[in-house]
Length: 283
Image (cartoon, rainbow, N blue to C red):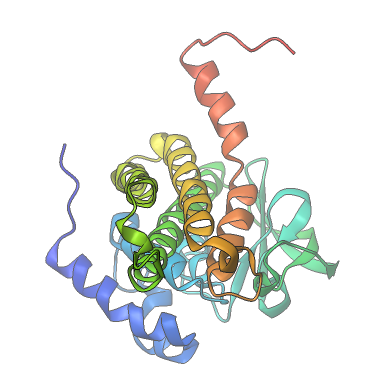
């Protein structure tokens, strides 16, 4: 099966790039993004390229939860920003959300902030939250929302990895050592080529999971591994400046690390191994 974007999907992806880069919530709202799955009838496959751009921009807004997770669950475009609680009630963008969703045990509940939460990426504006009133106990709706949360993480991770590789390619073309660009060294070329290849393998897996949620665990694992490899290659190829936390690269690397932790690729990999009958490793 070949996964390729339609012309409409490409047009939507391209249209969101500028407002995402600017962090312009009003422009995204006026485009109809937050009602795209309810008012416009778009599907997960249509929104995945948009979510990749959300990752690419490392936008400090709860775009994915508000546009992708909440509308099909609630049956309408949400009134205000939405955040989704993760493990331990840690809720990215919870400090700016009008609604926090807790999705567990086939039940969706609203959440109440209980205090700030420290994350490696401070731009996530995270809080801890506790579940409250039931919004729906339809297990199918909740299971689909849970799958969309994971799919959103995977798509954003691919976008983050792509941004880190592009940033690094630009840097190694400009940075000279021994009179030649650093990017001309074989070790640098191979490291970045491997990172790029990992992302190119992950992207169709994420699109496949948008078509069939049964593949979402594999998509998360591939996307998290690809983003991690991209962050390691980017930091190493930048040299000393890559380890400077004030440098732009860390904006994307820290977002990728935080999202990977929320997506739990290790737990998903264990589940995949069990599903195909692989023996457990000895403790």
